[in-house]
Structure formats: C-alpha cells, structure tokens
Amino acid sequence: MDPLTFITIMFVVLIIGVTLAKCIKIVREWERIIILRLGKYQGIGGPGLVFLVPFIDKGIIVDLRLTTIDVPKQEVVTRDNVTVTVDAVVYYRIVDPEKAVLKIKDPHYSIALLTQTTIRDVIGQIDLDTLLTQRETIAKTIQALVDGITEAWGVKVSLITLKSIELPQDLIRAMAKQAEAERYRRARIIEAEAEREAAKILAEAATIYEVHTPALRLRELQTYTDIAREKNLIIITETSLRELGLTTALSSALSSRKTGVKGGESST
Image 1: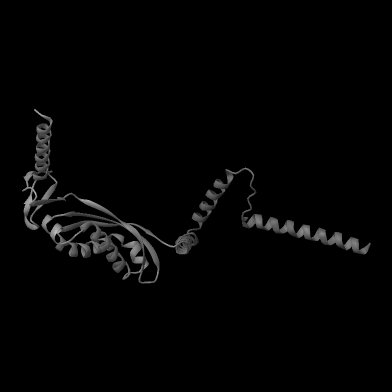
Image 2: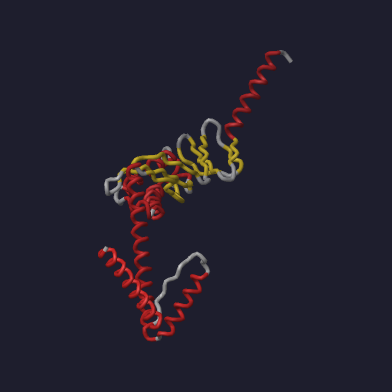
C-alpha cells in the first residue's frame, strides 16, 4: 500500500468517526435531549442512545436534576425605611425540557434575577419586625410568586430560603438595648409579683397568729431553734410580764443612781 492510499484511508476513517460522534448521543438517566432538525423542533429523546442525522439534526441536552442557585447579597429597604442585606438560596428543577429550551434562553440566569426582584418587592412591603419573626412565611410567599412565573418556562421552584438577614450595626446596638430593657422590666414585674404574693401570705399568717396565740409562741421557739445553730449571735426577745416588772425596777434604780451621781457632782 502506497503512502497516498494509506493517508486517504486514514482520512476517511477520521471523517466517519467524527460523523458517528455527531450522530450518536448517550443521554444519561437524569438528562433529556431536545432534537432540532434544520432548526425546527422534532421531539425529546433519552435516556439511552439517541441517533441524530449528521449535519441536519442538533441535540440540546437538558439536566432534570435539582439545581441550586445562591442569590447574591442585596440591600433591601423595608416598609419602615430600614436598610437590610438579604442573602437567599433557590432550589428548582426543570420539569418540561421543551419549554425550558424553546421559551427562555437561559433559565438559570433568569431565575436568579427574578428571585432578586421578587425579594425586593416582597420585603419592601413589610416592616422589620415582621421580616425577623416571620422569615419562613416570607420565603414561602417569595417562592409562590417566583414559581407562578417560572411555570411558563417549564421550571418548578421547589424551595426558596432566606439564608441570612444582616442589619446595620447601629440598629443592632439599639435592639440589644431594647431587649435588655425588656428583660429588666420583666424582672421588676416578677419581683413585684413575688412581693405581693409574699405580703398576702404574711397577712394570712398574721391573722392566724392573732387568733391562735400559742401558735405564735411555737413559731417563736422554732425561730430560736433556727438561730441557735449560729453560736455567735445575741438574741433579744420580748419578756414576760414578771420579767418586764424586774426590768422596770432595774431601769428605775439605774436612773436614780445616775441622778444621784449627777447631783453630787453639781453640789461639789
């Protein structure tokens, strides 16, 4: 075989290989292929082997798996004129490959922009407290709005989550002070409630002790027993009538003695 013939055969084999590579497509289980013949839609192929007419058919492979988009952070102004930075994540998948190819050029980029716009519109209609306390409800509202538009594109939005909501530093400090003041107010209220309950109980106990005098004496003795555990204390108690008379006499004697001493000094 002369060299020219060999080169010709190799060239033909190369052309055939390239042609077969263009005609045969292997479509995986999670993919579908859109077949366009001379630019006109013919149908959806796959999964498995799909044969295309060389130089006439064109195949566009579409991935049907769940896709995730991290929406870039953006500043949004709430209804009460507070600027917050919102970061969201979108989960979606293509359910109709025909619409995803024929109705929209780039569904992924379009969904990202649509989500950003919807987030600004929804958050702009609510105040900051609602945004912080009802994040899940707001995310579902955004999801419903985005999914209603992307349905015509053959795309199903499964979930939209607000990953983070960043507040200005001045507002964070103000909210911290507000939370601290609220906790202090609750502590004062709880303390006042405890004082009121204690006063009620003491008033009831005083009424009982007024009716039952021995009970008061028993309570006094119990108090002495509790105090007796401390050996370095001096206990001053009320005296009985007899002790009271003795104490009065001693007090009078001491007063007379002091008076006499003062009179002697004065006479001197």
